[in-house]
Length: 136
Image 1 (cartoon, rainbow, N blue to C red):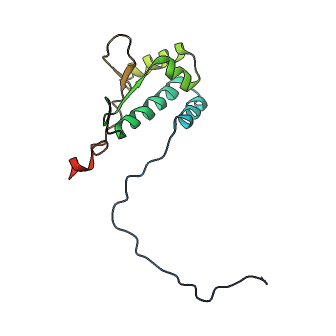
Image 2: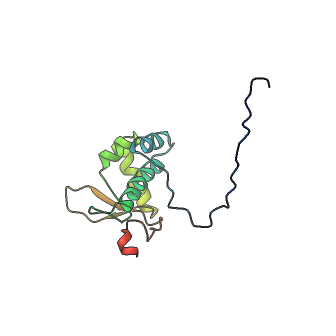
């Protein structure tokens, strides 16, 4: 086409693909995105499970705090109801169905505290949540 400039000194550099393993890649899922996903899901069980998995993954990546490095979710029923956009009784029913299937295990907590859930079907990555000095 007339009017296009063609560079004369264009240098093309071809590099060999790296054989080193890639750094740990992960998708960024903010709370807003998880809530949108949970509200778009057709059933309550999937929505509740998505929210629990999101928070458990966050705790697993943390290095400090009571749940740091552990695949645990600490959420109250009303918080789950808000995140999923469903009624509290629907959330409680979903949690009971997930517990009956063994997908969610409730940890023991003192009265009046948030519930702590473990997701036994997810295998914890042993390298996540460990500081760089501990792995050397």
